[in-house]
Amino acid sequence: MQADFNACVTWFGEDPDAAGMGPDSFFSIFLSFAQMLQAADRDNERKRIAEERRVVHTLSICIRREAETKKRMDMLASSKQQQKQQKGLEFSSLKAGDAQDIVKKIRGKRSEEKRKELADHEHMSNQNSDSFCSSSSGIDKKKTTRVPPSIPEAHGDVA
Image (cartoon, rainbow, N blue to C red; front, side, top):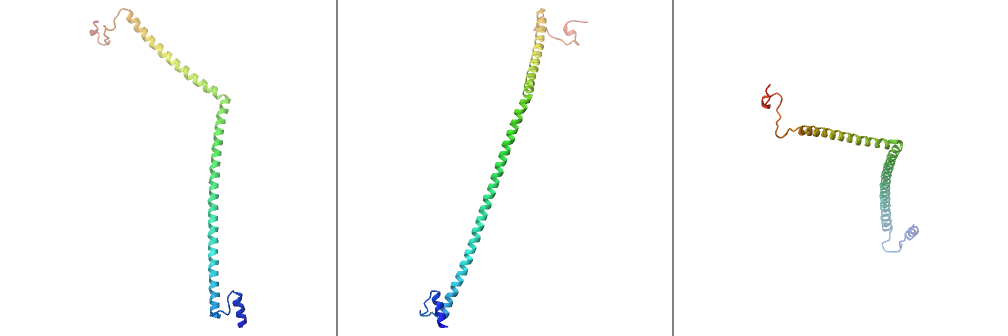
């Protein structure tokens, strides 16, 4: 049994002839080694799990950012497409004769404004010619006063 113990101690890298290398001391060294090995194994497992979580978290952030970027790009592309369609509709409506209708409306408004202006001008001319006619009749308007027809005495005419 001693020979087996010495072979076992030698196999684990200890000197069986060293002072104090009895079964109690060898097995206490062996036990502390096994406990430290278990602790290192648990620590490595915790580190591996933490690393996996970090990688998963980083990947989820990257995936979320990619999805947001893709969503923004899709929105931008659809916005540009809508703008192109609107421009296309504007041009197609111009091609369909709407431009001529717009020009006719503008010309119609200008014609209407000119007609109103001419009518106002003619009205003013008529008023001026009426005043010219009355002033050329020899009546000085500055000297005459207008009296309402309801008061004939003030005019000087008694009925």
